[in-house]
Length: 90
Image (cartoon, rainbow, N blue to C red):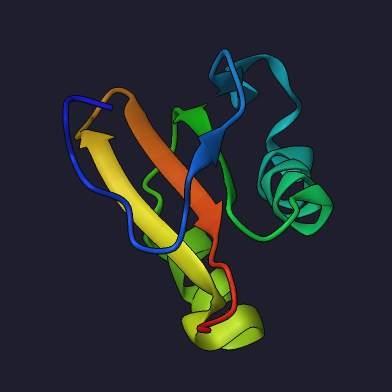
């Protein structure tokens, strides 16, 4: 995206996933489920209508250095975040 190099992430899923339409209780768990379904080297973008700091902390505590987080648009009212699963170092 935008010519930025990704670290150990090469493939991005097509359209951003828009969680704004989901019930507030389900938004963060939906993003976590999407991350769980990624193969190493894949990424997705997500549109959020809530401050993403809590979501990022949850990823950090659950997946330590195994994820990539790039904030593409800073809100409020909306954030566009790219989240990827790193490929193992070779």
